[in-house]
Length: 104
Image 1 (cartoon, helix red, strand yellow):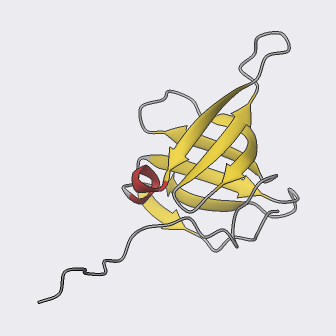
Image 2 (cartoon, rainbow, N blue to C red):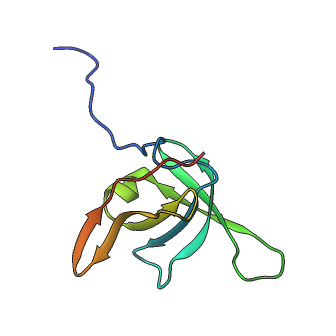
């Protein structure tokens, strides 16, 4: 019996999303989603900068990978707005995940 065990953990795939990506996200507790751009992308969380509608102010929100993996977030993102990828977006009462493209 070993002292250390290895367990698989959820992580954002940084080849699919990165800083500079345009992103729309909605937490299950929000009435509306927010659109912004990814300022920090790490395997454990994304930080998204967005305009809250107040003069020249910006704000941010974080998407922890643990919450995304549990299905608490709907996310759409794009590197160039030619193609838009989706994660956990509800369509006709079903969840779907599509392959994405990288942003950097």
